[in-house]
Image (spheres, rainbow, N blue to C red):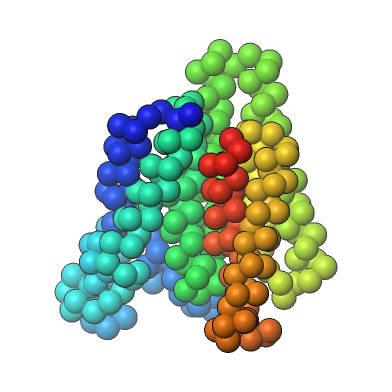
Length: 249
């Protein structure tokens, strides 16, 4: 049942420390699909994301002109810390926890980007998949990389490919429903869920659709959206996967 409350508290703090790094990625990628990734503040043109290791203050404001250039103050930090702490309370294997924490942290960035501009950038989705796969392989090595461990990592990767293929099929059938970014995100989510078995992968996938449908129904009933409103699916994929791991892993 997890690595314990002290580690959960430590990971909550780690999530808070990662927040400024994730904010820089969110700012960099939160642009419409027909525009290049941005580095400059849209108000004062100061370069605020000079490179991959750039950070932005938790205040969500430009360090120069103080205009809002990101999510609300401390929202990213709180979300990341909460996700990591919840995972620590549920997952006991340190390498598997590291894999899920990696995915959870990048998932927070993807959440904010997708909600803002309906995009799931390749740089983030591919980084999530590679990180999850490498850390699960490390888990196998730490356990002696027995035949059982090799098989488990392989099946996890196959679950990722299967979930991605399922989303690709949905895109072919109904292209307006979702985008290729959702299929690329499914690679990492399916691999992470697949570590716990194909049933968990199926349920995690279904949970994403259930939550998306529930949100759409409630928002439609409240008049917040219309039947033609496009709702980003990535956040519900992430939330469904997280809920499934917390409940069933």
